[in-house]
Image (cartoon, protein in one colour):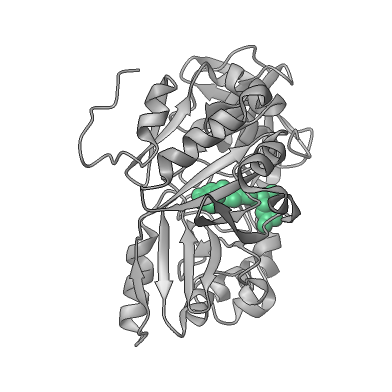
Amino acid sequence: MALIAPSNRVRRTVFSEGVEAAGVKAYSVYNRMLLPSVFHSMEEDCRHLKSAVQVWDVACERQVQVAGPEAKRLLQFLTPRDLSRLGPERCLYAPMTDQFGGLLNDPVILQVEEDCFWVSIADSDLRFWIQAFAACNGFEEVVTEPDVSPLAVQGPKAEALMARVFGDAVTGLKFFGVGRFSFGVHSMLIARSGYSKQGGFEIYVEGSAYAMPLWNALLEAGRDLDVRVGGPNTIERIEAGLLSYGNDMTQDTSPLEAGLGRFVDDAALEVCFGGRALMEERAAGSVRALRPIAIAADALPPCDRPWLLLAGAEPVGQVGSAAYSPDFGEGVAIGMVAASHWDAGTELSVETQDGTYPARVRAEFWI
Ligand code: THG
């Protein structure tokens, strides 16, 4: 594939010079910002992520800041997840829906101060929706995109590396726990979270002054842990069933279809956008859903267009993400499949730009 033409419209990040120094080979674009995706190869990056520790520039996970006395009440209109357990010490994954129950984004929400929240967004312009909702409903809350850049530390050795840079106390964080820890004289917001199943943390770096010093300190402190610069890995996140907004689901997908039913709470459905539609869908049953799909192939082209899923000659769905997994010796994929064909074990075929392969619906994701 050709290079991305650089311009101001595709924003660099506060870590871009570190990413370039590490020899980035491929970027994606996410929230109109560079997202470094490949350093050695997708397969080698995956192997390394599963065995060591990586530092990721995920500044493209932009924060939508909602500040004001009613910020939490405002946010509860936007998500079918009950936000009552959200607090200064606990962030939440909170898919957001429109009035028809269609997914607009699937962010993580953090409470950074009593009256200030960060919505750490996936790839869609969620700020416009939140700002319009606030403006049209008499909320005084101020909605902005602050200069905050998440940096992820992911992999089995992430805890060891974080302890060296931030002190042992950081290892006390539980999954989705949040706290402030010092980097020199500077205090940084850190959560035990991140877009992999290998374990790790996300540091919300405020401004640019400490961005490269932190980046360099992590790489320096982790030398004997084989730390590398990496990024969200397509193979690993599909194996783990971590969904990608824009690939696996869009505004045409409901959280129930996306398998996110555990983040749809009765209490929230009473107030949130799309609550009625989601109640009805739950009562009637979804007509399609995301499923892990194994593809019998020893290599796959990039999944850069929807791949049709067929039962014989009958179209029964589509794949939105796929990659060849060296660890499982097959293609790993996430597909939207009609209820008639979503049972585990159902044999299908998948049409890629490079040919048609046998595919099978699985019961569970791979890891
Ligand atoms: N971290 C932060 N912001 C983000 C992402 C992130 N914004 C963009 C994107 N990723 C949002 N999407 C997801 C998808 C999955 C998860 C987090 C963000 C995730 N899911 C876990 C799971 O499905 O197993 C845990 C969910 C839970 O139990 O609460 O972590 O990665 N800051």
